[in-house]
Image 1 (cartoon, helix red, strand yellow):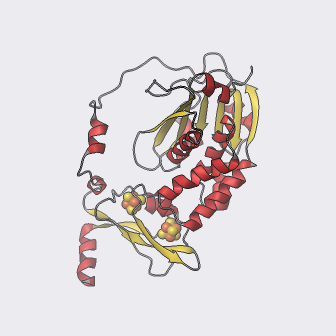
Image 2 (cartoon, rainbow, N blue to C red):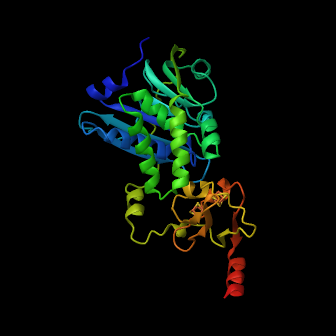
Image 3 (tube, rainbow, N blue to C red):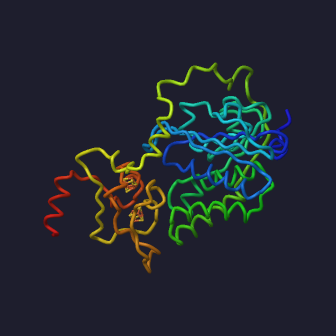
Length: 324
Ligand code: SF4
Ligand code: SF4
């Protein structure tokens, strides 16, 4: 069984890519960056979108990218991807990340295991690429964030991109999120470290009849246009989605903020406030909870110093009275 040449695929037809992970794990950023990387080649056409089951941290999510030298006329979920990414092995407990991949396809896994072990465990036939992204994240970003490495491994799988283009594209995506320079530098280190950590091999471990696409089961009950209406609404302040009766609270009386930047990177609304700090590069001072904090609790769960919490509204009002 010969692995498919992904560069040749995107030149002759459409390279279809699918990723499985967990909300909060950086899958969307990895796929957006891969799409942007493809767009650095003016001859390529690109399509990219994520599919959320829930905005809460830990829920399974999927992302899709199509890349082609030809105009892309298809617009639906990717069901037979030539390249798949398993960002979080926990996601594979409930979905078959290899479903629909043709023999000879490419499987990228963020894992500590070798390509051979993964091929046997998941029953994969094709090119298997592994990278220990969580460990690289822990070393350079001070958290088990594997998306930087997963993105590098996918770029490697497609081939034809210079390392500088791979690095700069990811860092540009972070800059758009107004990430501080200190955190950008740590991401650059993680990108560079990932390049030499990619491992791969070709295996034929899929059993006949496995990873098949099931018959179409219908679209479910979501009304047509529901998402579009939500996105186009003029008064769609995301704070409306917060649970009633509670409010986000930030408190750091003992000056514990280490400047790790995880809250800034993970806040989907980009509303964490910070200031430059000589010792740690930055220091978080709070967040804008008035209009856009939807209490997703990302900042609460990622802060290693537990500086964010939820407090009842009446406590927040009492604090306001005391300070006024
Ligand atoms: S500030 Fe609000 S919106 Fe941002 S991560 Fe925290 S809870 Fe979520
Ligand atoms: S508030 Fe917490 S997560 Fe944010 S930079 Fe400081 S220590 Fe890191």
